[in-house]
Image: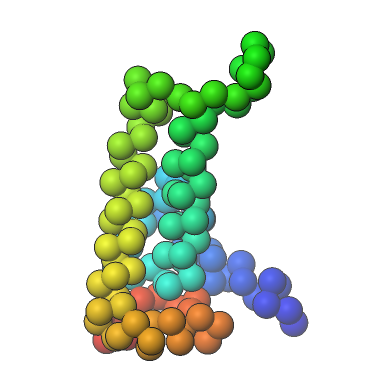
Length: 121
């Protein structure tokens, strides 16, 4: 069985109360128990979402895109998303300090990468 076929079971364990996957920017589960893979997915989802909030696509007049104004970014909750990204990156830094950077990086590709984080990790 391929990794893609076994992945949904692990993903379902980390969905939030609304059923959102950790890769969704609006995911609001616990960062402290999220697996390293889930933390990385949440970081990537937030980073992409924040990037999309800085640009407005599909403007009919030239140019076809433009930078959003500070007012537009505020209206879309830009500060909230940036604060969540900061929390995600602080959690990753805490884990790296807890077990050591090389040990944390060693989790990539290991079975522990998809497992919920515990304080004993």
